[in-house]
Length: 110
Image (cartoon, rainbow, N blue to C red; front, side, top):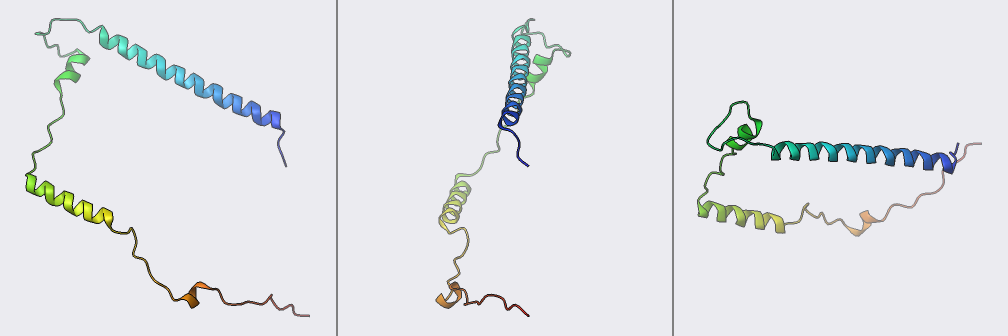
């Protein structure tokens, strides 16, 4: 059973329209978030517990722990060595295994 081309096109148009509405909604939400972040106004010395922007700004992620350079050099050497190796060992098969055996058509019992 085949569908008519105009039915397929209308389905594609409906899907495109849905994606456009979704993209427009995401753009509006993003713009509202930017507007809310830019309207943050109180003294810098004041840290309010109920101010979301101040809460987000005060929790910075921790720094990466320092690694000795020798350990980093060993890691990079091992990574370089492993990257140059083949992804899987190549099994060399004899030529007779690469060509399939001859086969006749199936026997029809009468």
